[in-house]
Length: 342
Image (cartoon, rainbow, N blue to C red; front, side, top):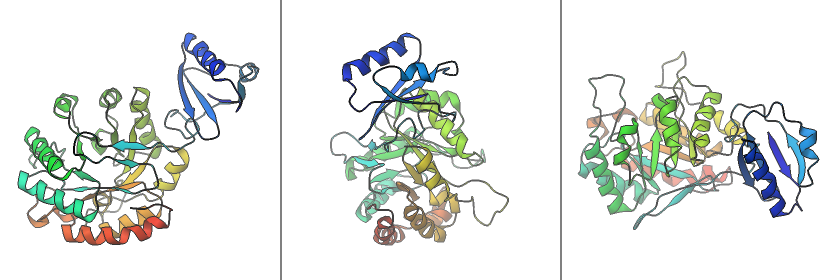
């Protein structure tokens, strides 16, 4: 249930109103926008009398929310959520959700310290604001390269110190969290999108979360997974479309471009696109990236490798540094179509 307060309502009376609902056992979520102040009531509100609530002097409108996701809904939070990523000495923070395109770039897997540092310098020079790299890798085959683990995270941190780029990497298991103290943005991958115990734990951490859509997940299921994180206490969630599985196989996955305007209308959370995993083909990545930016995406996550032919993971979908640099030169034109800038 959503309660919209009157514009001239006294702050003290609003606070007293909120406390009265907490005393009744309801969860509350207060959102202050430019023009309205909204209270979201969390819990079983089916028996509450909307007319009785409206009788309170501070209340203007009462609305019931039919969507199962409450905190992720734009009705609960009318203004866009802005997620800031990056902190610490020498690190330049940046945001998702404002009028800018946040570009995350780097190798699928961290292979050596020299490799990830070289790529980090190249993508930073081209305009990327964040460095991605997999230290722990979920792979379909148990015999495929599974990542360097803790050592891979150490290499990422070296690249972070040398470039100042905030780092983005995937967490597969809560037992790995002890190694993530200096990670700036924790990625929950497609295969873990409905690992609800892991999502609840992400609600307890003090870091932003990049949540990827499962390869066979509906948009509603993606939002419900975000709701798990937010309901557990962490509202800094970024939604990521990385392609879904369909009947066709001419690309690795099918990039759902329509998810961008839908999520921007339905939710207040930032939305980014992963064209590398969507296509699985290097030559398609620039076109899909341009389409995503023009359609209103808040960011991109792109795989870049300095020697994709010898990459240990997903080389066929990784741009070379010079190809990434060329893409970054033309992206601003497409960002302008949505009123954003790179």
